[in-house]
Length: 480
Image 1 (cartoon, rainbow, N blue to C red):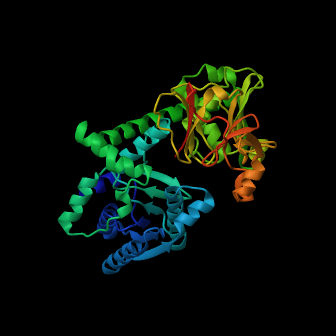
Image 2: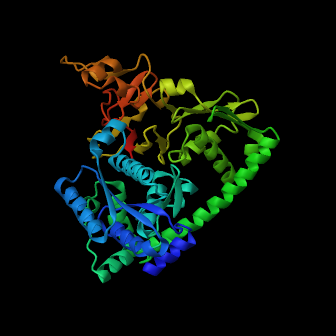
Image 3: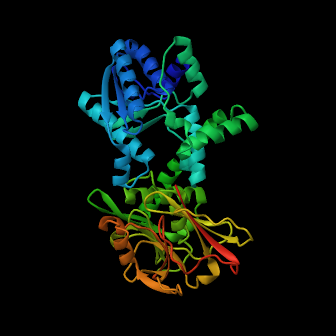
């Protein structure tokens, strides 16, 4: 296996003579394998290695034992060691991120800091082939485009440094066999064995079922398909760059900037309409990424919303996450940073809903899934904060998913014997439930005009409950 990794490093130009690498080492099997293989190359390539361990403040004494284990191993081998500590649950709450995302961001901040402090130019992390397959399935389930199908890149740039993944072509079984053959110990993170995170469910349930029931090499084949998808994406990306340059030369693609920040992109609507859909989606995603300042959170649904305006009438527009707006202008599709949208928040007019359903990407990266289902006897109605059922026929106006506006209110049952519905302002509800002021503007609402049907993730109103007379149910579910 070691030679396989060395060949993969050469194939992808991951390391050169004299490089320095911050190596992410959790103490688990993957990272211990990575550290050992890089250590075996240390003298041959004159590498400088610094092992970086991040304690997330989640697993208490077990996490502390991981840190001591890695530190002792590095001391024995003479490898430089740096440890960082954080309260990731608190950080996730503060930044309104999942614990997974908050932990990932903090880790890479630590890697970058070590590179800057120590004069290193590489960040080595231990993603393997199974991780790549897991990522592809996760992206597909979330509604990713072709960029998500390519999975994890062997090498990518991050803050002036190169992130390298030398084990990406190795399975977890290969890694464990390598460690067993050499008598190298490793730690097991017990949270990886639970079903608390979406990726764990894919790792522990979905991939094993595919391997057992479909093909034992399912993970390898998914990773291989990801490589092919990456090659196709690179090809289309090159064609998209050539097309954009040609349109710019013709004055049909105009980008407005404010300093280094792109503030608007105007693209000829006829040119977009005449393109192959694959080329068009890459061009639009690239434009949205420049406006947002990042590509990571620009998903397929955002591109499709923008595409939907190409054949539309002048004046039609759609607010997108991250303070962006797409609108149909005379002869053009305009994508822009929308100050008003950034100030007033997020808004998505739902329109028609089918049994197939509609997934709406929210600003915090989560998704609101709306669908119609027929009402049946003995139907199990969810009793949690993340899924709500409504009598669809009691909703007379158009439905919008948005942040708050002046005049928003809920209809709630009064305290009297009759239980009549009373109007309660959203502001009062926020006060009663001690919602902090800064959090109110970002709270997502499911509304019918100013009538708030559901404070998403919390209170629903009392006017549209499912009853024995209900025929159609609007099911609303908040998902990751």
